[in-house]
Image (cartoon, rainbow, N blue to C red):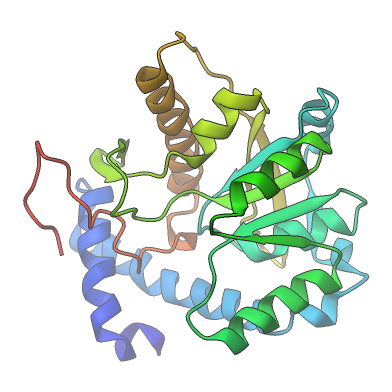
Length: 262
């Protein structure tokens, strides 16, 4: 139903899937698109009813390899826990918090103040702290890492203000420098986390991402951003129907490829 109702989003999804999967037939891409809307409806319903899982997230969420996160925390530098708009990203921090991890979400403030308050109140109910994007965010995040906390953030959105571009599904996409900046400054380990729907449950998977650093700021920033993006892309390819293709991911264009996409 959503697939046929949201015509504007359908156009964006169609364009994005053509970029991401050029070798697939139009019928195959259309199938992914339909499944994508079914996934999104399921995700929205789960988020709306998240309070019902308070105190029992372990019944819905299976943590595949927590030893990777534990190893990263053992370095005592905090952890940059990176994810994208994939699977059920909202369930990750609550599930980890209920397992005893100290989780802080770095979040953008919602346009609607009421929605913003409701979301943060729901997160706090699971024991998840939040840091809003803004002038104080850098200081707050630095303090959280110094306390060996986990900072969870999404890194796959278009960033019109950034001049950093990474290869995402064969096409240059803008990328925030925030994760790279914190890693290069504090050497906090970077761990990719994904939470796809697998049957009737969610499965959290961790992946430690190593980098080959040169000491040159510009090169190292690109190295960190690209490695993260490539790791996320690899997981998305396994579950293409569970990614947020409705987002104009390739909206900002680099000087060498200025042609608008949307």
